[in-house]
Amino acid sequence: MLRSVVALCALLLFGAAPAQALVQRAYVSALTGNDANTATNCPATAPCRWFAGAISVVTPGGEIVAMDSGAYGTVTITKSISIVSAPGAYAGITVFSGNGVTIASAGLTVVLRGLTINSLGGDYGIAVTAGAALSVENCVVSNFSLTSGAGLYVNAPAEVAVVKTLFRGNYDGVRFSGGAKAQISDSQFLRNTVSGVLVDSSAGATEVSAERVVSSGNGSSGFVASATAGSASLAIKSALASENGSHGIGGSASASGAVAVNVSKSLSTANGLTGVFASGDGARVVVSSSTITRNAAYGLYQASSAVFMSTGDNRVSDNAVGPSSGTISSLTPM
Image (cartoon, rainbow, N blue to C red; front, side, top):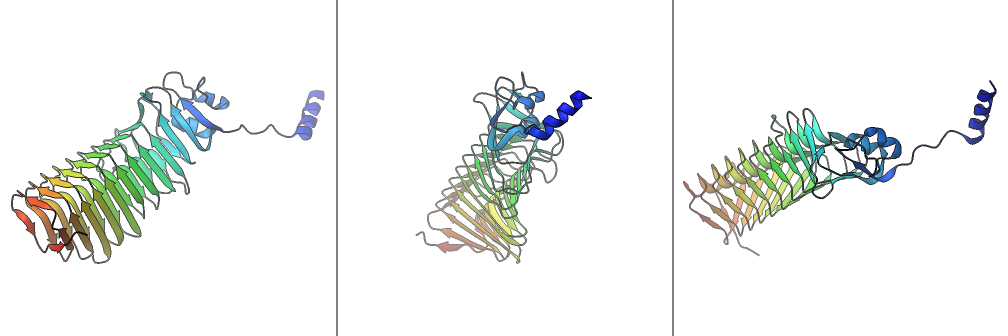
């Protein structure tokens, strides 16, 4: 009885114990990690096991570091954070269902660096339906091949950067919609079921630029912008689109949508139908300083009231059916 009275007096006098302070950096380890170490904030000397456990102890704007090679589990990100692998470590996320990384909270800034995200039945490697900014750096995202799946799916007005990342064997390599603004550089999109890079608008304005990128061996198109409403824009520079099942690069739009595709200093070759195409009332495609060659049908293809403009410095040759089809307008380079 006396002890209870003393404890009650102490609680009233000093208040409850303070909450555990969050840390700027937490560590995970496949070799020695244990999520019970969240009690001590997952330091390098006592790391956590899974990304999902470590995220609870990190302050917004902090980071989780994968110390050694192994699988670290799927994660839903609810705060601004960086998740990175140590140099030389394989930091894997295997996805049996759902998403590898889910970002669905407004205002977040997220960095993913050095991760390998692989599907064994998952929907999306990285799915963004809310958030402010995402940077995907030096990652590999593969085998998200279920119908309508994607290696990276963004349906939010977020700023996105994709740098030195490989998307392989997905339904779509990357798919942007919902007003996303994305920059892609030094990345590869290989053997995806439908498209390597898809910009798809049904509302708002979605904008993507891609520079020094390769999109090859995809089932339909290497790079494509499409809009049924709103607008989709795609700017491509110093890119390779090759051996895709139908088209290297293109844009299509209905009368209520608007698509703008600009291609410069790029190569579109050995695709199953066309090198570059434009289709639909709302589509506008401009090609400059590029080489369009050895495609199975036409080099340049215009249809259904689309606007297709080509500058005089393009090289269009050795396409099986002919250099062009439809109305291709000449545009004088500036």
